[in-house]
Figure (tube, rainbow, N blue to C red):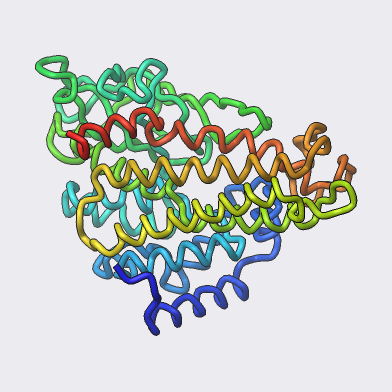
Length: 395
């Protein structure tokens, strides 16, 4: 593993940095760096800009319209986009479903869905968790009964991110109750416009609306929309979760949050000095920086094994990445002191002209802190990841 970047890697980093600086719309950058709400149109605009450049799917092979970049190039792109204030590319289609279609889908499915993912003509959401089956997906109950050339789906999915914006959802459904629970699960693609689907918003602590419950009432889905064999959903789900967990590890996001901690701690004053000048707070920032550096080395070790199955390593990275993100947002919140207490949800909207205690930027720190509490839950809780590590690595 070489921690030094090659000449080509240095060149790519400079190219991506310059492109983001010149092409990312200023209003989107202001929202992202100010921890304000990013809307559907913002995500679409940025994806269209990247697609026009040829960078719409940096993790895809060239044959499907991607860049064909290796893991190190992809990481450089991710870092520079995050540090430059770009919103994340929505992962549900690009880095979760797309690899599944490339690995398990039919040629017809790849030809139909992949081009519409890269342009975001189709916005995908993920239907895995249920009220009684989150971390324990094997106990899911959303039922798909086969009738001729269709499945009839009944049940509920929850914590479904951006379901209110999505026009497609990929779901794990139970197609059999025979044998082990894992063997009765199938992976299907469902058009959100199909009659019988209801989306119910779930408001979070910051009064935002990112997640939802999705209800299926006798929803007809063609059998042709199943990916892989009937009953093969469990293996497909594990394959997809490996990609999701590595994405949650988010080295670029960790680095951006670290920068924001330094900036905020340098700006806030306590007893006549900036917060970063106080030994105890500076020590915590230094510890966070060491954790980010160690996380980067772990990511690079995985990247050096290009093509290898991430396996339990994805769980290790997911735990560390999510914990770093939580620690960074906790430091941001603490740096604001008592000014973090008053909170106006409307101040998270760009262009809001009112006043908040300590300024608009500080107003955003409390909801950011609460929002990142869920990072150790989604994609599989830290407890689940530790169980995977114990079974796979420790034996």
